[in-house]
Image (cartoon, rainbow, N blue to C red; front, side):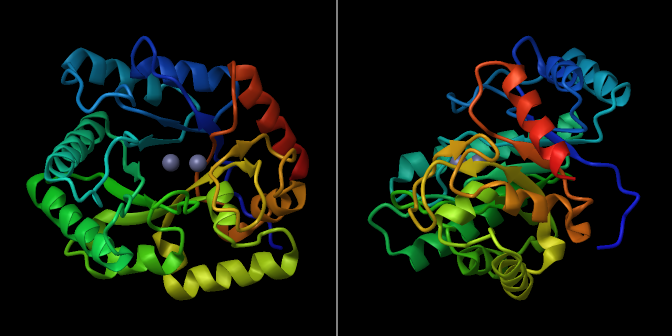
Length: 285
Ligand SMILES: [Zn+2]
Ligand SMILES: [Zn+2]
């Protein structure tokens, strides 16, 4: 494969304890060139607005760091597929707020779990998600793109098939503000095999046909505790799970993906766990 001059965009999901600027410093301390953060507590629907000082401290820290890409992840509570009117309106409002926070911080991408269908038929729930996203974008002008994440299909989570993401995209009035975040654990658990050169190639051909590679803006790098097609969302350290090192070697030497930021969401008790997984990956390249 041809060598590219793109530097490796690799890092991890990093805590913002003490302020978003602290995530930049933490990420840098273990050699990240890309990080993912929550812009507020992930367990709450809403948070205090960002102060100008917080925003400025973050932007300064980022500018002075070796971190090239920062992406945000939206709260797991948000469910645009919900059939409960109260949950749904809270979800839309919370998502709009997260978009605004990203825009304030200058973060270009916000990763979203598209939603869960509950008792609603999947097709109907997908249309609802698309419609809700239209409303959120309409109400929240800005530069941040929402990345629909590929899901494992646990419970009634939507978007475990690439076609489901495509159906949301097709129904969007704001296509320029939508992209995709691929999670290696999730697609594997959903039944997409990445472990051999043949299956790896076949997967990306499918991705390109159904969604188009241009829509891919971020990758979550996770091994899987559970088997291919298990539809269970259980992240594992790189090389210690059912996906294995060969798939990650293929991914990290794929010049088509060199410009995409790749972040770990592997189990961690401290930053050293991320550093160790990053070292495993660097050894593959
Ligand atoms: Zn996620
Ligand atoms: Zn996951």
